[in-house]
Length: 602
Image 1 (spheres, rainbow, N blue to C red):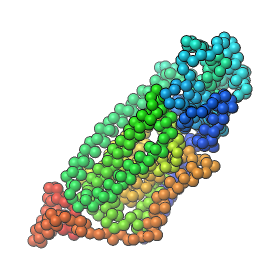
Image 2: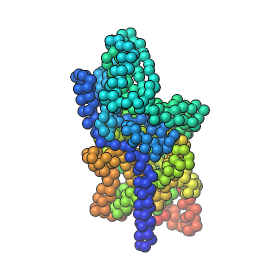
Image 3: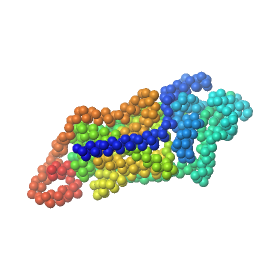
Image 4: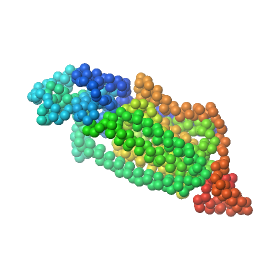
């Protein structure tokens, strides 16, 4: 009892320390996220701007919204001046790294409008009016066009000529009009890039495009990033893609082995016992991901090319997006079934490492509740470890990451539902593949436990090198480190624990923009509900507590297995203990059903 209490004390202290590290090291990086202006409010602001300020009749126009981040500026500032200094510069310049982009368009019509609205203040920070190449506008000279652009910026944003210098002037001739593009550069912002052969300077620009008496587009603030830096990033991305390709080959090999294991053991007792449960989870995963495609309707609509019919485009997109969830669900079920079978064979006494024990008894038990509670602790520990690893990377390895992943769920109709789906899919599929299956597969073939945990973590970790973290290899190192912690928690506390921890981490990070903005009440409280869901399930299990007494696997024997069981039992009666040990090893080596062997040797 004292040992268990001591373990709980250590775990809680680690969780507190992990939460402290995350708040200290990671939280400041996300403080530039401000969703004070909701998606609906951004649409209202855009419509009002087009109607009252631009005199646009929006009748017949469709609307799509996207939550956007300036990835190029984000990565450049972090790489050149560091995370802290970049946040200070963004604050000083009143630069909107994040914004809502609202698109107004018609089917098969090139003319459309886009309005960029600050997610923090609701200010219109950008606008574009795309028109036909043959559209006519009155001809004006460049001087008049420049003055018109300057007057617009002065009236709209309080633009001061003393703060800016001319950066560029361009004219483009169309059949029936001229377009003038003007840009002004902030005198006080010039950030050099000197870490490659192609040097350059990032400049802070304000842009206006004019044709005739109309302002076709403008951007309040925009960083002009040197081409040398973009080439440097492209080279890093290629490295990440190469590492990801290697992972895909390894993943394909693992999946092939899982298929072989499932096919060879499909009639065995353990496989038949867990199959309905995992099939149900796979179907649930497919359904949730399918609904999330509908939930992400705005993102699909925003990318609609007006050169094709809207109906045909949407049908193709939905079909494409339904195929992916199907293969993801299949890719979850097969390794899970194989992992359960292998786990029973090599560690039948470690019942927490799979779902079989809960299937044979009940999911409403103190043990399941305990695993979920420890999952919250594991999540806090891992978030703290991740923050510490990133801090070391920022200081000593020249690491920087993009914040584009924070926008993935924000455009959804129900962002919390997207966070739920991301957490559910990633936690079940990845933990089943890389903890339940990979670790037990390696252990079956004699790999020491410590090495098995590391290899499974490395396979999982370097599958994440396609993410926007630079240098790309660092993501592999970081996630491998997390995978080792996951592996330790899996071996010590069980599969439910690491699934709960993985779910909490992914759903928490996906919900972060709304959790940091409590005044966005619905999205804030729905995000809280998602990360509280495992706790709710744990409390149900604790209150109902139907016990952990398992139904014997023997009740699931088919006639052939019952015959083999009786035959083997009779054969064992005359054996000495030494002969029984040898017989058991021989039976395992020749692929006898592990459940029958265990039942006989009990």
